[in-house]
Image (cartoon, rainbow, N blue to C red; front, side, top):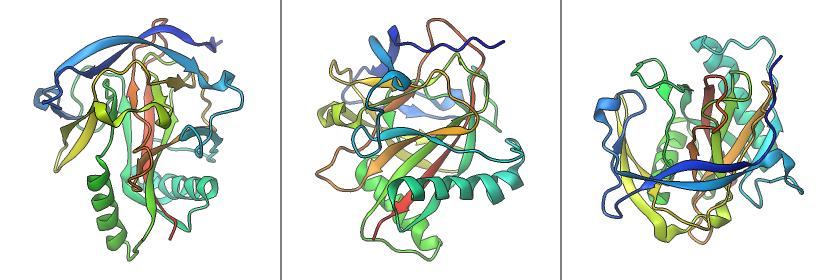
Length: 263
C-alpha cells in the first residue's frame, strides 16, 4: 500500500542563482553542458491540497484539475501526439476560457535521474520561469503562426502530470505568482538538443511562497501560469523540482506547454 504524504514540508532546500550577473546554462538532456552557479536556501512548502480556499489560476496562478485519459500510453509517442497533447489544449481552454489553445513544443517526460538520457529530460532543480516575457511571447507568436493562428492577447500555461506513484522523491513546487519579485530575475540560457532559449532564474527571496501536491493522482494535472504577456501582471509562477526530506518513489512526469489565445 502506498503511503500518501499530505502535509506541509517544514524545511526543503531550494536552489537559487548565486550571482546576479550569471544566470548560467542548463540542459535537460546533457548535464555536461550545464553551468549553473547556485546557492541553496531552506524554505517551507505548503501542501496546496490543504489550502482553503483552493489555489486558482486567477489568483495564485496555479490549480489542480481533473484530467483523466482512457488507456494512457505514456511512452507511446504517437499516442502523446494524437491524444495527450490535444487533451492538454482542451484542459487549458476549459479552465481559462481561452478562444483556442495550441501546443508550444510537444509534451515531454522528466525523470528524477542523475544520468544523461537523451529520451527523457532530467528534473530542473533550480527556481526558474521558463521564459522572460519577450522571449515567451516571441516563441508563442512563432508557433501560433506555424499553426495558422494570430493573437492580440495570449499566455503560456504549463500542464504537469505525475505518472509515477505518490509520494515522489523529487516533486514539483510552484509559487504563488504574486510573491515572485521581478528584481530577483536573472537571465540564463536553456541548451537543448537542437535549440537554445533564455530562461529566468531567481536569486534568493524570503517572500516567495511555494506549494506542492504530494498526493497527485493519475486522473488529475497541475496547471500553472508559465508566462503572462501583459507587462503589468506578474510574469508567472516560478517552479522547481525539490528533494523531499522524507524521500519517496522515483519521480516520472510528463509536461506540456500550451499557448492560450484569448483574442
